Length: 295
Image (cartoon, rainbow, N blue to C red):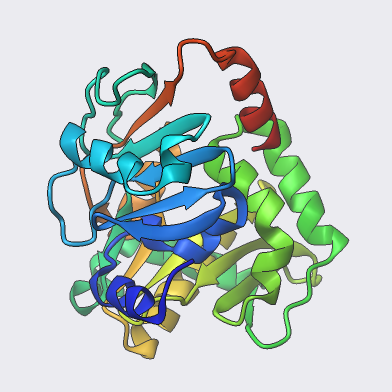
């Protein structure tokens, strides 16, 4: 449980989409702040997010101190780490390490510093957004009253039918309902000229200094809808007075990575590692099946 003081500290120092503790707590467990890192514990499994809030190095020693900080952490069936710092295979004594994802160029948080952003510097993106607007695409925003329909779920279903699903996608799918009830979440919808839903996304306005796009889905049949969506979202964030807007990781999607770059996004941190630590006597495969089938 995060205290008021910890929440204030996080809001003051947060700098990446990974610091949206509300979103990650929905599936990873109760959030806590230990050694400057956000951690989540669901009663069995401990997850450590390695983007240190004060940008200090997260090394083997720090991971050891985090796990030793609470009896329930030390007893965790498995410990999961994701972050920009490489953690050694022997970081946790008595546990075996498994590297699930080594860094790739696209697996890094991307963001725009809004004071430096100008649509006039992005003619290609601007032209596609204008073309979509001329073809009747519109963007609507709702925060106090958010309505999620079968059309939203159908867009998600179609997306998953022709894309490989990553952790962010599946987490978002399971977290949709509680996210819609959260007062800091804004729903952005894209409609075509016939008022068919052709795209949507959830924008987190949790932190005072920046907004985070948690996830978005778009129809393949409406060219430029995603561009108009990004234009609207970025201009909304800029008008709100926040410093940055974050788009999260593209994981291994080079196309999505380049799309964000087209809109002026730059890297926030180094690419991420994803590592699991297990007791040698545990059935690692059963843990993976339970965790990854849920995600």
